[in-house]
Image: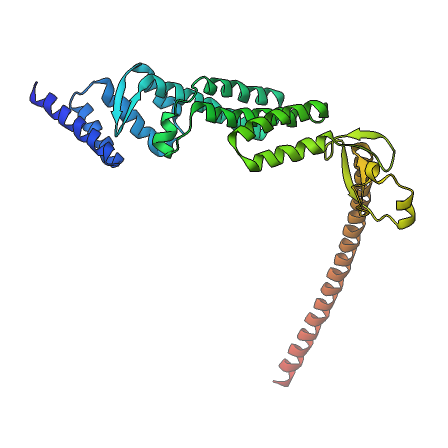
Length: 313
């Protein structure tokens, strides 16, 4: 072994040891020096890619994946862990897709985005009970491929439910029921409660107070509207069908009646604003004119006083 090769090996070994000590910046510097001294082994490039990924994780996944793909099937010691380049590549690919799908679903609740989440969830499920390496190394979180898939499945079915609730409340309830099963498997009580609330609401059937039409889907196809119902009216009302149970402050309105009332209310509000704005403009013009007139009178008085002062001198 030449002196240069020996120095390259020393820098590589030092970098590897520094990873075990958690001194990642120093480790990266030593691996770079090892490469500059001629080290071309797959190990050094895989470790370098992992160190460069650490501070930006889960960003720059594609750049790291390209390195892992260049050296497939290589086992490398990363601190106390033995990692495989092909498994790292797969995780980079899946996580990059999953993050893009989650962002898209947050932005637009569409059937396509929901299906995309379910597809990537299926790919994570194929990993089974093996722990995700990157989550373990960079987030200090132990999560299996199966457990990670549960979150994506839940989000996928929630997205599908939101996407179809306007056209098919019954289907929306079915999708949300699927999401609930996955959230129960995740033991996420908060999301389970939200799913149940949605299912109860979207499955509820009432009669519109105004038009009498039977409608399904609270906060979708009907909404509660603030009202004041007197006792004589209450005594003649099917409470369960037209107002929230034992609550005389609200009535149920189908979306058509609600939007018509809301639109007309907005129309009158807009007219009131236009009238008020017009009156304010008139008042402003009047006050501006009066102020200008008064200012002119003040200027005349000042000129008169100055003229008197000049004469007295």
